[in-house]
Image (cartoon, rainbow, N blue to C red; front, side, top):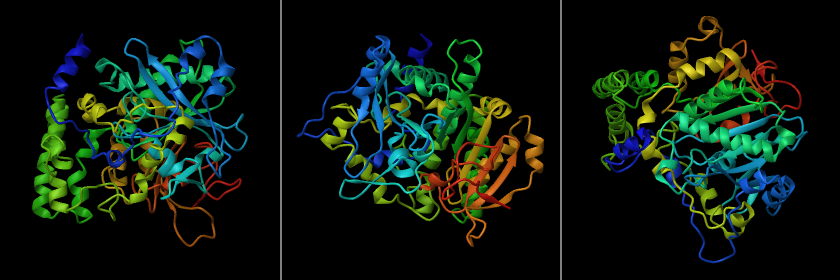
Length: 478
């Protein structure tokens, strides 16, 4: 009953919007009027009937022209009552797949499709302007078995037939992901004992800790265990209060606000933080929306009015590059829809998900993240040019967190990171405490495709894998 009440309250307000301008909304994925799109593939009936080999055969994605990458795609039903289905696309590692870690990737938003991460950031394919694909030089799927999921339900190709099937908080998100992942490992039991890592960026700074904490809580009491080893989060929007409190100073210091504007911005942020502490979630969201998005008023935000830029993902760009939208046209092709088994299902831009998650956007998951940091490997990374979850704001959040290594972290020395020792250019900076690693890359901002060099390890002890351009050695850290 409480969930129904929440949904009614949420939809009393319009129009919809999330905490961040969704660059994913610029992507247009349509159902073609001509051509054979095939039928959506629902794998849960096969799994429940024990027809695993048939399910795998059905979910196999034919390689695209010029590619020999093996992958599987389809739908897993996570709630039969509401007919809620999650879309996944799985790429076994190209090198030693039976031993490689399984890495889950979740896009931010809320409501951003993980197809963005696949095609724009670190998947095996890059979509060209003529709607063909070429291989990515440094793909995560080379050494990791990558599982891309459109999350939460209602994002991208994932869907539900009932309003109550949408997630309204991180508990809902975690439950649906857990249901999807346990079914996934039933379908692919050969991978269930491999190391498992949950990863994502931006708003997934909430999804990843929530899901990892859910696994951490259930593993001791469940017969089937998920072999969780750690998490990695880029530009982590995990603790809104600490990030929001630092916006005005950061924007002033990088020249996007003058002194008068800084004072106004700080006053609004102080009000937002006040509402968060009072658990007046919608009021907090409303203040932040006027500052950054303008979704509730259908007008430019304060940020856009004073900076002239609608985008805040890269300090050097007011508009996202056109090639970041190519994948939308690619996913609209009938032969692609048929290949990945989505048929004529609508691709959602995340607007509905944003509406249902509105109050969640200003809530914190720092306690869950702290518990994960106490028990697992954790990598937090940022791009130097990001604005909305800047490196300094992430550090502000980390300094405010209490976990077993927090005192050592505050005293730890940050080191220069280079891909090779002989490189003239600095790749970024690294600070490491035991199994926690913080990395800042020297060029990419959020959503700028620099992730292909990031997931690999800070050192041999921190996270799995190898560094971009390295066959066996970790990145050079000085």
